[in-house]
Amino acid sequence: MRAGVSEVSCDHAAQTWNESGTPPAGVHRLFNAYYDRPACLDLLGDVTGKRVLDAACGPGLYATELLRRGASVIGFDHSPRMIEICRERAGQGDFRVHDLSDPITWLPDASVDLALCALAIEYVDDRVGALRELRRVLRPGGALVLSRQHPTGDWLRHGGDYFDVRVISETWSKGWNVRYWLAPLQVICEEIAAAGFWIDRLTEPRPRPEAAAIDPRHYERLCREPTGFLAFRLCPRT
Ligand SMILES: C[S@@+](CC[C@H](N)C(=O)[O-])C[C@H]1O[C@@H](n2cnc3c(N)ncnc32)[C@H](O)[C@@H]1O
Image (cartoon, rainbow, N blue to C red):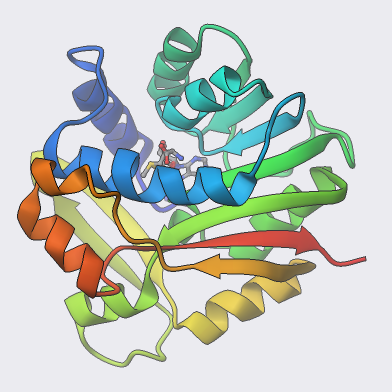
């Protein structure tokens, strides 16, 4: 398997996420709606009138919000079921099945104003190649907003050598098989640089206060500890 999450697992996850036609509840909602999404939307800034690429768009929660904020959105995901759900949810935009590991042959150079890749890059073996492609399609002056698991949190959870770049394979609740890369912060930054970006902003988000009512234990923990996600705003180096 080339990419880090099996498409079967992604399709299964998509099905689980959308059984009721609503985003995931409980802790999943906390991590997405009240933690990752506010951070990335803040880093994207004003998207009105901008052409935004949502890479690994999943079930379209970002895409829907970006459209609501006045962006035109194109997106992709390697899971056909995610794309189906995304199209249904977003109602407009251009979404297709595509793998982050492959060249985005259907987008010309410098054809989008902003790109977003939320919570997916750690699933990809050739992260530099994937980031290079996202850089290629960005217009000069554009930016890529990238979020991913926090390396310190990953290391606290898995132990071992923090500096080791390694693959973790796990089965999460509901039977989702996941395989993702752990890397220290230095390597994450080196990969970003190797892809031709400089780091404009790096944030270690805290959950929104509303999250306390959803899951007080995770809320408290994410307020104190780097056990969640990191988010970057990356600009193409010229
Ligand atoms: C945790 S979800 C994030 C979805 C969305 N970005 C969000 O934050 O709401 C990870 C997504 O990455 C997608 N994904 C994983 N590996 C991928 C790959 N190699 N190419 C494209 N999409 C991938 C999965 O199908 C899934 O939709």
